[in-house]
Length: 432
Image (cartoon, rainbow, N blue to C red; front, side, top):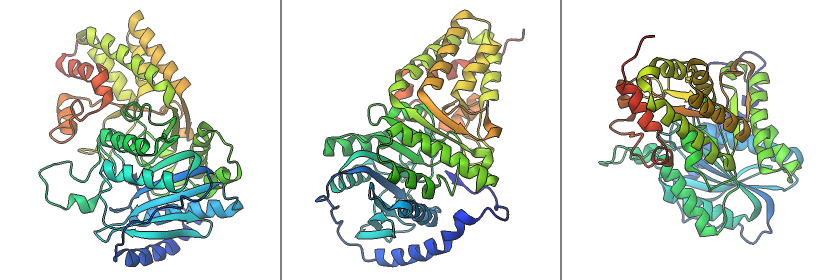
């Protein structure tokens, strides 16, 4: 989830100088949205642009006004050159039950095309319909899906407060599980007959192995952070200008630009958030090797967990990268996958374990482009993985609502990671 990290110092407010104008535009948009009308089609008669950048903007929570801020920055980026190489269709759900808007970002700002009856942004069906509308309406050579909202790693994303307020026996009502996200993307791509090229998470904690593996085969590149992301996020006035001016940029090249620009903004404009300056562009073709290596490591560790429990626990503790707020009982209990493997290799003298640790680190290094602030060098390598420190913490984090091994994750179904965790909890520490 995006989080506020304190006031900026004097001279660091220029990116936020548009917030008042954004809030005014948002107020007008909310008034217009009260008379919800049938959804309008996109501009399907247009010729294909180099890029269609689709923003699935779930502002039906405390992030509503910051959605307008993001779109304003994108408009600034387009206005820098106004080359017409990027189309930006948007579904913007506002806080409350007043409905949503379909629109498009232009160099002049966000233009509403239609009012939309109140959507459930936590539903894969809503996401699939948005993808179909945007991809058919604005055909392009390449497509980016920007999922914008709170994020909680493998737990959930896209919190819809209006849906949550409705009576339901489902404790996950109004929250999108990761397998639901994948289902929605898959359905939207099937309807159009073409995959998206990139899935970007403008949301916290989505840079997880569990998430990237779930999206296997659905995109070429995934972009996300393994840490918290603050309200301002990617400096779109800079990144969108680059994309519009260089439409031939490769998909991974765009991902790298996002990563570099976010760290740049935290170093120059948003220094109070430099502690979380981390973003990764993930080559999805490399995820099979990473998951195979993690699975091999999990099996090896579980085979002698009673002897190695202390070393495994120490490695996980050293690799945890979450701040002490924002998760279940204050913590998400996520560990950096590369650093975990590195710490295990240092602590356990076993040739088989060491081989798997080397494979995990190589897979991360070869499959990601990660940009971080200086304070995170050697701490964050781009992808985290679930590792609660104890069975009680595991149960708090995973039960009764968020069942790590039973919520449809491909990662837990295809690997022995959860079995390794349970072996760890079941083993008693052995003192050497």
